Image (cartoon, rainbow, N blue to C red; front, top):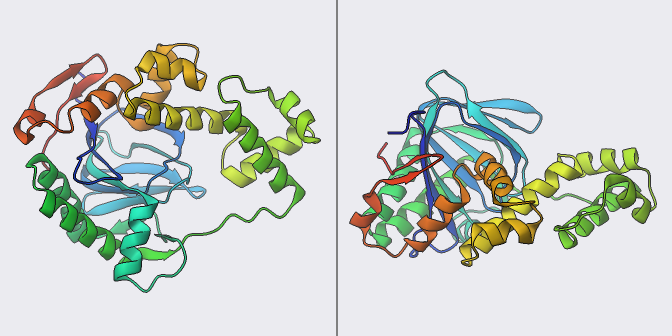
Length: 298
């Protein structure tokens, strides 16, 4: 085991398209403010996770799930000295919408109403999904995932809040986001960006925070990591991905990637490449300078 006692594995199972998977134990790990393109369904096995969400700290312990909707800023850290251990599935918005349409009465784009839900049964379902992927049991993994998402939507589902762009400030924030997305590798400074949009730096800063829950520079780092993930999934090397998205070098990407995704980019990509390996092969220990990457059961 790594000296820190922390370990994590972030992977995909080819028979569950559109779903990311994670097992982790963290003690001193602290996730900076970030977002996900997918839903987060994290089932706590032991310990306590604290994550800032919606303006306040949320606490999830054994038998609880931490639930985060796509594009929702949040953090993450240990709530007790021994840290927390959990398994998580990250289904795509398209998959969740498909399940909601088939199994619930929800209308519009579905989402989770509360960020923490006490439900040991659903926690068990999430861990069973992960176990099924380890065993190469595609039928069980897909079935259990759909049962888990259906249960969570029925217990804690609702229409996803839609962000309306009505005010001049909101429109400026949306335009600023588009500029940063387009010019990610060479973004303008705040003063220049505000001037291009016909507003002041502080007015743009306030509007951007109100619209996206974080200042432009934080959003840009988050967006860079998200794009780097897509590049790594496509087979681009971490060094190439770092330059493409605008980080100065690979160590710069490594630092931010690990603080947001939970594993280093090299380990993240290796798991993608080994997703078609035999189930037994996936239980091999993989050493990484950031810690021991090894799956474990709840």
